[in-house]
Length: 106
Image 1 (cartoon, helix red, strand yellow):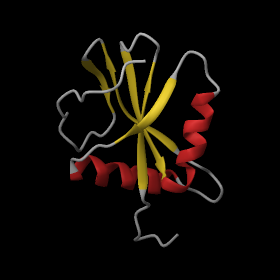
Image 2 (cartoon, one colour):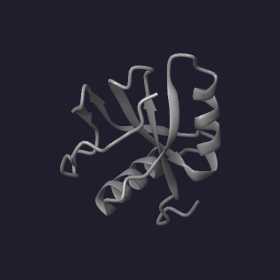
Image 3 (cartoon, helix red, strand yellow):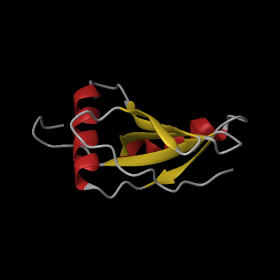
Image 4 (cartoon, helix red, strand yellow):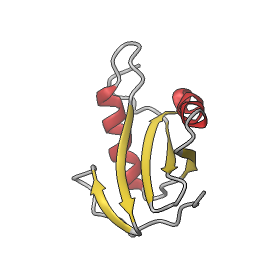
């Protein structure tokens, strides 16, 4: 990968069965199916595709994933997490905290 090319990424929303906890993660698009498959094996958590549409969120996440990609390393980064309808973690320090998105409860 060229150093000035940002990877294409996909986001996933990972939730517990109650839907009270949600984690928003991202990885390179070529690794996305593996991310979903890993959570398909888990009885306690479910993962589905999710889209952040804010260009700042997407760009900052692309930069983070690019930074974490080394050789065969397949990075997954946690953008943020929600508990009981409130952000409890937001890892993109250069991007303002967005409104709490709607996400599926399983």
